[in-house]
Image 1 (cartoon, helix red, strand yellow):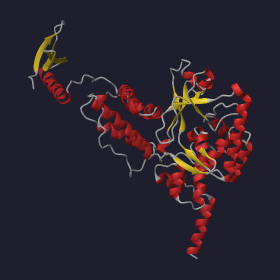
Image 2 (tube, rainbow, N blue to C red; image 1 turned 90 degrees about the vertical axis):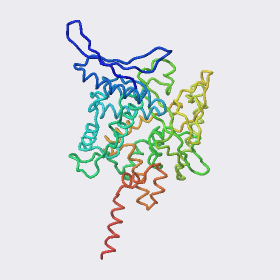
Image 3 (cartoon, rainbow, N blue to C red; image 1 turned 135 degrees about the vertical axis):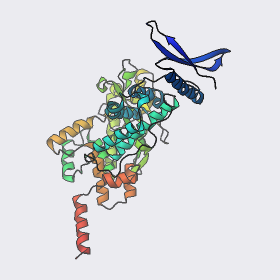
Image 4 (tube, rainbow, N blue to C red; image 1 turned 180 degrees about the vertical axis):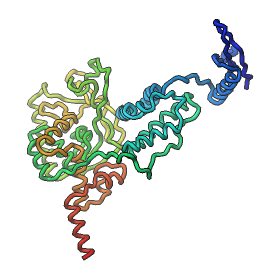
Length: 433
């Protein structure tokens, strides 16, 4: 280890400061030095020199990034680490949580100034604000991953996010926030289907949500290749997700769904949430409905001929759990430059893609005209609750809905319906007569 030299420097105005300097590895036979000035005393310069030399000896170079804010570093992390191996939808989720919660509270700190105490206080504050345990786990994960990356890139010597704790037994100042999951009663669903009958493009998406418990993106990513009419099953092989693209200006980027209505961004295929590839048994009635819909679409395609909208993807959509991400694109076969054709279930009469956002319109109408508790996700909740009410094994419900954790099945979606409560009351009366 080379000697740390401290030298006095006199500025043009006559004031003095101190500089440290030490030798590092030679490059091309030339001796190289690291130095930094501006210290008020010789002792300060000596101490700073020791720290810089220690960093150099341990990491191979001196860290000179003292002034970067945590906010700027988070952007650097997202661009230089996350984009390497994460899906665009995952990165977008990271960015939303960072912008909404982490950046406002921690972004102004210099990266080197963040301590474990600051991070622990942040998590406790979020807990007291009513954030659920899963939300806090997600935020903790973002802190840990980003600061580990800071260590890897030698911005900081160690991570202050080590062994952070999420409160478990502490009573929060505000009760834990939970998204409401409404149980849609059969009589309400009957009115919904009357409002959006079989002739409506929203009918089949509503049916798939209500009778199969499929997620919104899974419903609108369903292709006819996923439907086995003979065995009466649906295979969940993918979902569609929205990727914002504020720089979309070229015609190549406008390929997303083929219309300008999509704004700056596009819909793309990706694997199901939690990689929950699965098979869903469907009723005879739903099977017949889908057979009739497929036949109707084939007739429409023949009728519209060259005016019918077809779709393709850049790469073939596989069904083995290794599906690539790919935009939902207007079929370039119409332009003599085709990709791999896809056959979506949820389309309009002329073949155009129905995006998941149509369900926002449906929900607004239902809330205004029928029931204020309706949203598409409640169909999934209702489906699980109806199965539970009939005594279906929770393991089957978990597999059918693609939950990664049985706790979700039991704690979130299994709804205590009136029938379940009545049945329980009857059993209690029989036991304690």
